[in-house]
Image (tube, rainbow, N blue to C red; front, side):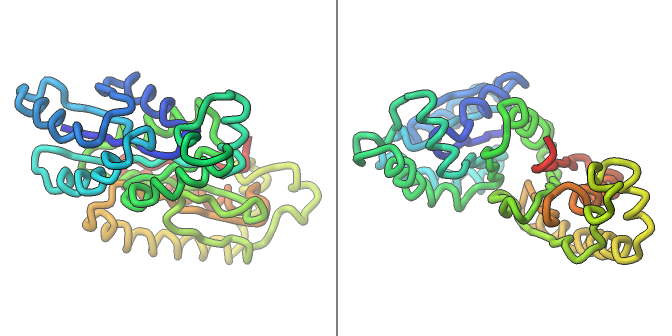
Length: 285
């Protein structure tokens, strides 16, 4: 049985994630009291595994006494021989959550405990920290559309086989901040920059003129080769440590040229060796 526990701050996209899993055949439960989860799973196991894929959303809408039990429940499931369990945590920047809640005018789950919406959002972050720290996969939805989030959930969670590692390469621009959901970051700002060549500036690292330019640069080639060697050596150790997801951030100044090109090259290489490799270019819209 595969169990996906979805958690995260209100407004981060948990309902969208749950719906995405329901669309691909998961039995989904929203706002499940955490203390009921073990009994639910045990009952389903006794039912001769009629349901093999289950997703449950457990978040700050739980009573605090229930929510406190979730880390111990998660650890128990991790040791269960009949269950493959993953904890998915969704989050977004404070300003993004504030904007989303202000636009919907919905009542925040923490509204009764604090005096205003910004404090409610921050209080929820503190409350959920023990759960966030356990997450197998964290997704920052700040810049994701509903459709991007759905695709990410389907590709990385639903289509990942139980024994495989889901690897995502994400390009970004340092001037826009480092993504919150990456496991490791590599800096491409030391490489030759096509931005300073006027005829290349309007293109991206996926366009042939930029590809041709960077293909000829010795430092770029050596950087990619070194990253391939590093990741090829250490990714198996992540798998041995029961890691199901790894997100690699590749950054340059603006996230348009060098980081995009290197991300594409690395993903192309590892797709020949792994069955779940994904790409995200954060700054390309």
